Length: 114
Image (cartoon, helix red, strand yellow):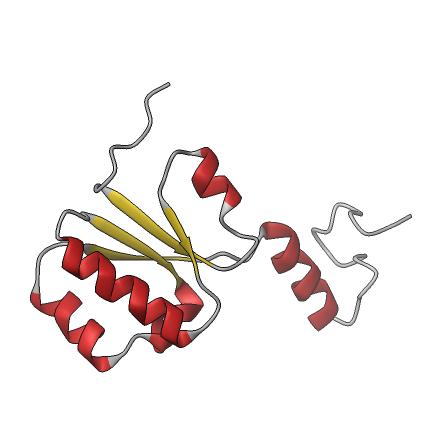
């Protein structure tokens, strides 16, 4: 198995969401607030060899104006936004919104039944 060369990809993840990326060989920075996110992005911009910078979709509003403008201005790194909500979380949320918190809603496959 070949691991990713350091410098090609950097992933920023929420605490507890980093394991899959690490198992895939990607370098990961775990952040939980706006300041940590912007420090990691500034560091990635300074490194200069990052090709793709992946951040959780819901963290995009946390980008500082300075980092956002820098990412718009330069060709690398490409900012990739990913959704970190799992399909199970999505399924449970949709069933709760339909008034069926037990998971008995359509398409639930009975995942939350005893």
